[in-house]
Length: 444
Image (tube, rainbow, N blue to C red; front, side):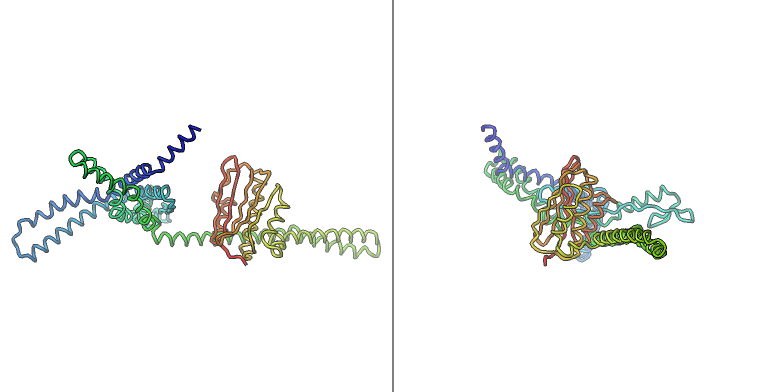
């Protein structure tokens, strides 16, 4: 009891006012370090450049318009020097500093900001013997690769947007985060000589510390995300990938149907025709043999009919059409190779395309659970909330599932994305595995 009480007391203190102040001071210090680079670079350059440039007109005795024109020119020159200094350090510092700020935003605010930087393009050797890096020709492959890497890194719109973040944060996040630290520092220095002023500054800094770092949220949402052109490029690439995947899926499905008809029903129907032709010739000379051939033909026709029905069920399951998603998934669970339970909280039927997408996703996940995960028990949960239909398949298998490129889960992810949905995989090595397919839709 005593140990439990002590632990709870420590947690209370950590979560109380002193804990919030300490956390706030730490976060303010981190943000100050991540956003102060433009000031550290621009400040000395502007001071040194101003000292040099403004000395040129210090003793000027010309008319006021000429002196004003000289000051304007000197000011523009100082701004030019400052801009050159910032541009020089920008390619080397903006990306790591913006990445660290994104990680802070994710940990502190739950603000997930995914960006994509330009990849190095492969170089190609032309018929002339020169190497093409996507922008210019080179005599050697090594030089082409080097130039391609340089172009990808230093001519990336996302990198330049990270530089915009640093400049924007230097005039917004930096003052808000640095003021509590400066107030505490000045207060500590003044406490000996002026106790009341020092304590007042310390109190002001401690009060502002839990709030000074929070400007990271609104500024980060605006400037730490992907650049607008990158967002558009992402969406175009995503739609192109979805279209390519659907095209491949359709081609594979047509090939499966053709193979099923050719190797199954078609072969049986050909054999059926041959048997009936032979029976036609034997019916007068050997009625008994003709009867046996007709019996075999009847059996072959029944087999062909069963194969056609199975093929149709794979294309458009009748139970899905007639009874809806929930009953169709329950039918899947009854036929599964492992023990499967279905729990549904779906009050009505969704649109037909969404039903089909979720049905075949669950069918593939059940197959994976039996074939790859070596599971003994599977739970399928169907849920509808917030205009999103969710199918979650959990198993007690070996785990380790991942939506790696080229895998079945990657295909499921792209097919869900075609409906604006998502795939979530939670499958640690050793299990258990929990895979969720969520698709936004309206119920009928």
